Length: 455
Image 1: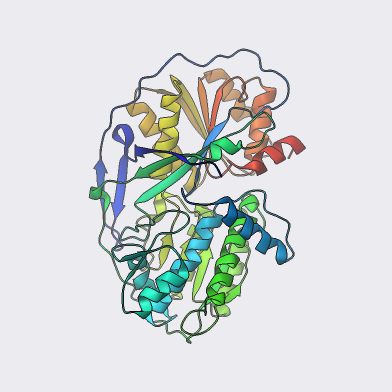
Image 2: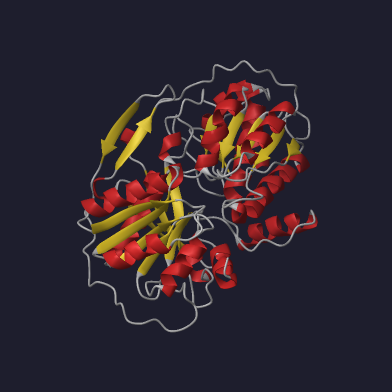
């Protein structure tokens, strides 16, 4: 594995406001400014060469700096040993792995798999004795200490509302084969929220009792618009549970596991799965991947006194949600990711941008952040178009981009992004003509595979 080329950017670039919310629902808006990079000459619009139509498209995905090729191979091999195909993408595998580790450590620290273990989750991620493996953290607990788990996906360092104050992103880029280049996987950018965003830790009011054996359920996308994230997330989760059980389990017993599909917001699969997991007596649910899906089921899950821990939610709408201090996530909120995307656009010299995003909590949230940062830096935002991801065609939306003629386009999408890009290429404004930028909902080899196959 190549050495990571890490750089750091402030999360609150060019006047971006971060909302820090307490668990009881209050919020406090803080703005910090940094100097904007100087814009350079606008990109060329020369006619593209044939083939590799996605080449040059850039975008973010959360990625810890310490994930080794060896670990990725071990996760994939374990996933294959369970009868699955080898992994081709690893998006959020480390986050799902870390979610299970943090939950298990919190249960051990609390001495119960009941709802009270949620009160230990934030503490497991900060202000204790550093540890990077489940076994080492368990040893600290056994000695009466407080572990500070630094995970594969990052240091965590949770805020009082159960989300990380720091994030690390890979700035991915598609190559001539319509696949993510290996070099871009190592181009890491660190971002962090200011101290003024820190909020107080709350505690849950739930009195749900445990039965002495931790039971984790999964609410992740086997189907739907984020299905490409399902395999790596499931793989990271089950690999962690296997590692936990090999090390002796939690509370002296093996951790139980039940898999479940979240689907997407166009179905009620998540609701049905949540009902099943609740009836089966799970203590914690890892998921959902989609912020929109989480918002459809978070009330029933937390009302049951069950911890909900997402490895991929990024919507700001969840930062101050009334979740009785039972909801957590280790993917940084969109305030960080949006700033990183916007800063890359500024560095690349675009003078004007058009933003196209799916119309849900995730898409609208990140689009708003990108717009605010760009405009504060003096970049013209020629339009923001929220679209229906279930639409049969995106001709009209792409037509608006053609008419606006921006230097760059930001696409916040899920798997429908391949059809949008196909339309853009056919309209003469694909990534070989305009600068295109994506986010974690679409940046992965699955986008290239879907584009190549016409999906």
